[in-house]
Image (cartoon, rainbow, N blue to C red; front, side):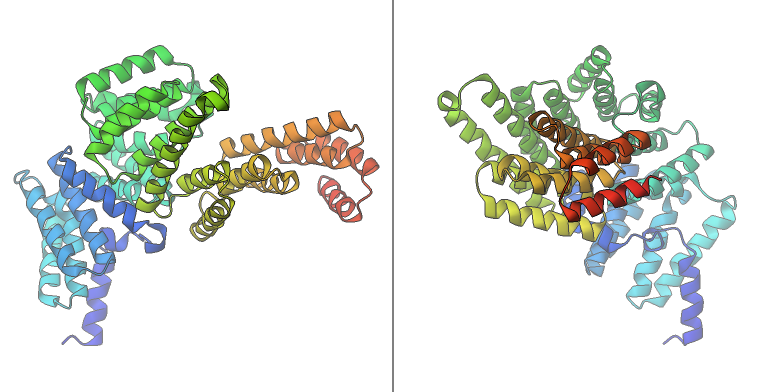
Length: 475
């Protein structure tokens, strides 16, 4: 049995390691059910290189540890070592992370001898390659952050950038940086200034056989009217990798964006046959059926197309329910599902789902603005309760970290305010709404003008007090 001094010394050595146990991967930030599904999907599909498969086994080992299964964790870590060593003799740097994981796991299991054995292995690697950090470790850290939680995307970005400083031409690090930029860059970013587009091109140049990257570039280009290049990239990707589920699902998303809803549904259904537990694909199918419902309502009367609309709505709800079942904290799917319940007049289910989404978003400090936007839409279009809708549009507008939700809330509020002013040119509350929009957009003088107009018409004392505070805040 170790003395407290020996244990403290061992713990100090362990804390200096670079591995999953020391990367501050907070269990509360991670949707373990969804992560487990995605890691299993990656292993079952057998579409990754041996390096990536080894990395996936390491991630899986750490997830199993978090779930309290040390025996399974050990099995995955040991398999990761086997796969990594199959690269040949020059694989020491690739073993750093998994050796660190094994040292930590044995420490938790109370096996000090094995723990120290892996610490000694790491000392030998450091003596052999004294120049640290290693690009291999930075890259693996980046992929882990990218895989585990969207909260870690900024940390992933920094890891890939540092790895590329050491190995600028490495395809894996270029791909990692491209994916994280694709996921984090503002959708409305000017294409000429888009670092995501530039990095995707760079990643494709260093990974010419990666068809997933080509479809991601196509999706981003299509937002900037680069349709012809986007279509060429999609055609090339689907021709080269017609059965790759990740290519299929992103092409399905591209087709939906282009209005080819039935083609998108057919492709995503095929992808679902390969990966039935994909929350992403179920969510995409839900979005497709939602768009199909809108198309059917626009192109014919509800009476003549009622059966089709009902079938599409059933499918929409089914796939969104599957997405939230497979990924219980999938806030965007929860928002869509709650709104569909509302459209289906299942108001109690809608309210319950929205309140759950608010709880999850608040607990995770993530996507809170999107829940306000969807709940406002629910109040406006399903409940016909405009005051509640206005309240939540304004809440979303104030949470200004995402331009998409901000812009949507501003558009809807402006539409409400202008309609009300057309009906009543002395509607003080409507002018107050316009003032809030201008204030949140940083248009100080326009906001002041609107608040002063509002103050001249409003006679509600509480609202007058609120308007005065808003007006004074701009001085």
